[in-house]
Image (cartoon, rainbow, N blue to C red; front, side):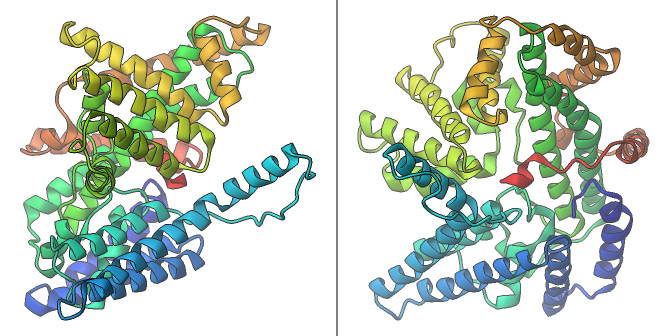
Length: 474
């Protein structure tokens, strides 16, 4: 089930909200609401593939048990370490099998074939990737690590932990919510009209980002990347479309998750902070997918030594972190090289004293250059393989001769409809007021604007074909 569907908007969400607010909320009764949220979250997650829920149960049981072990101060440190290892190996093993098995076996077969062993030496099972597994395994694993470190309290009961893992607003595509950030909210949380209204407002802005901005921009990107040899103008226009699509798609989902959380009394982390207004790649990674960036910083970069073991080690640590970040996004060489591409610029800026080589320019040129660097990186993220990535880069810089059909494609992607849509995306990206700031003081005029935006978004939703969120694949 997806947020931008009529089933969710007109059936699932209204019924769940109605029943949720019928349940008692004071004191110990909050656990009744938590249990209710857990059940409906399982329904939400297993809507199309019910067996996915079983996998989530495995992760839930694993980390609940591991948390009990690492929180027990009456046993040896070795036994507590065993609990930590159990969590990490279990979660990463599960993630590795479902996400990387086919990639690894395909590579192994190719390697054997290269050395004369014959193609298809090993049979490769077709493994379905469970939606959202990268998110909830990171969440549950961070719980065990934080308890082991003594930074988070052990959960009091299994039902509370189940609610934390399954909570449907942020379940499928983040933000990555850590137990330490919502532990108190699972025990007690406020339900006020103002909080509900702000949640509904931020949910509406997220829905509009997805339906009105991301999906139309995606049509431009899809057309450009489907071309054999696009013109340079079309190639730049197409990757700019993807630039807008991936931001509004993922930021829109995160906003909807934050909004839904508030409607149920929770407060989740803000996952984006105007990343396309960044003045460097270092600045970009402080603003883009903040929950993943901070997760990698806290659980990988710092344990590796961070910047405490010398300059060379710092560079190696950054390379490892962004290699793993690329791998986290998917079992493709393009994702791995995208992570290394980001690491190259981060290391360069660290060498320059956390400043870009263009850091002395005025702010606007810095933003433009940063966006160009990000655009070239998005080609790696969007292209299906390295060969098409290189071909697209060549098209962008005019190193290939466009085909005759490319001129027809150029006319299509620069139609008035697409030009207006892209201009709206540009205005929304680079205007100074973010949605989270705009909804802080809701007035009658803002309520009227949000109502109109919601109506237009719903009308467009019914006119568009099914278009799931991009980060569902991760």
